Image 1: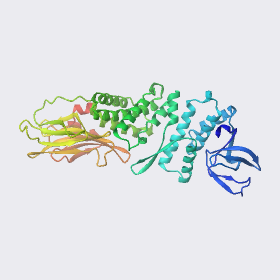
Image 2: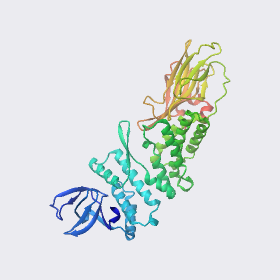
Image 3: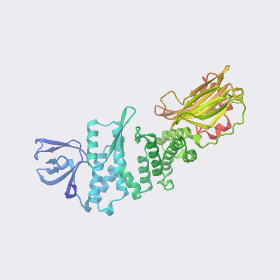
Length: 467
């Protein structure tokens, strides 16, 4: 139907009435919204006589409520100018997509380049974000979503934590990457296509891994050498997050070598971020990326030799997908001092023991961004196992890591970071060994004399908690 249209009227005002006759008092046949198109068939009494193909009905609209274009190459410059303006105009996404669709119809194949699809994708992605925030009038927003859907723009609804998130499927951005847009356009496309919040939480682990492998492939298509530092930072942060996720996934599937390389790459990408060039809106993303990288950091750290005497931790297979931890002592080889099995990913490289042999710790990663510290500690004549969590919240993004022991072995030093209520909260604690209750807590290592004095060089050299 669109191929036969010669003259197009684009609706530029929300709630534009489509009248049955060229009079303001005539019956309203439909309510039109920004971005809708109409075929112009004539003019009468200050009204345009139009046909609404979407609703399959004729009618009349006021001339000042629409903009008229002939769909030929002569209109291309005018349409391009409007698209460039609307591309960065918040709230006018449906209108911008309508103009972009008209430009695609009017332009010759040689005039259609990646910049046009960049505009389409940017508008669709911003509309999806606006729909997810639900800050706009519900009626207007619903109408705009309906308008863009009529142009074939696909928006997906995902249920996450009791709320609905709207995401753009990214078709226009895929075209940008395929056609070879500018470095900035390719960056926008890659970041939009790899948004972690737009991954369906209902995907299986295998499907999620396939998505993450595809995401890193998309991100690697962008050359940071041609980007300003503040934009390159965004790419490094996204790569760091995805590589950290893959480090967990690959190691969990038995691909330890790939997992180690992914972990090394995640740390490398995080190190490439120029903090002095971070945009204000990217500082929280930097903190979250650092925590995600730290959660999988053990994948690339070699397992130390167990030269210390005293209790040692043995890892053995349990049920399918399960790892069992047994704390054993040469004095009582047949009976473990403590034992527990877990479906989490146990990092052998994280095993540490106090000098007195009264505490043994190990990092256990339960989710791709959540790593706990399990502490086997002596209490009286017996041994207990307690799990230190990054925060007292549902598992999400966070980690706990051992920073050392005091010389007498009576205190355990730990660093915690977790995403709580949208912000990364960090704490450096001195815990009593027997109870693991906090004795001192500081927001920075240097604020606690005990922590600063006795945290080990091993921890200071590898930690990401001190950025």
